[in-house]
Length: 184
Image 1 (cartoon, rainbow, N blue to C red):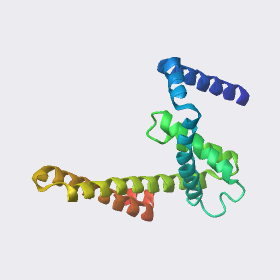
Image 2 (spheres, rainbow, N blue to C red; image 1 turned 90 degrees about the vertical axis):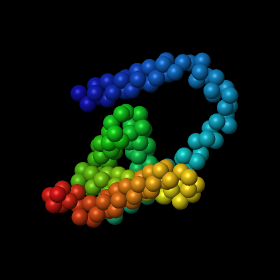
Image 3 (cartoon, one colour; image 1 turned 180 degrees about the horizontal axis):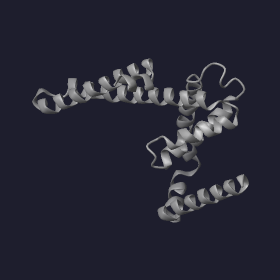
């Protein structure tokens, strides 16, 4: 049963990949590769470096003993699979987290530790993104000319909402998700 499911999922994935290629068009894909040449592979280097550092940080979201027997390259591959699912399937960036939990379970990491790390990781990512957006909006509010007062106030409001969301996420994380929901 397990092998049949794996084969079925493999065939479904290959079929979906073929469908994407067919929809894009072989000529367009080949034309892009010909235009880029082998130097196009250099575009993957920055993402690989950032992703590798991010995976190193992701390991810190687990308790110290959770990944003691899981090599770095295994966690790198697990994250790559999860992020590929998050970026491909419209599941609001949570489908890949379930895949990560499943793959970590196969490596001997408990579901509780994996789920806790997933919540911490997504919270940290949300805080980083909201902070980045809020800082950009604050800079726009400060640097736009005075004649754009309405736009400046709009950006100031976005910055305020971003910093408020960040503060709220910190508070929820500190008190615990269930505890915060219970208090609400």
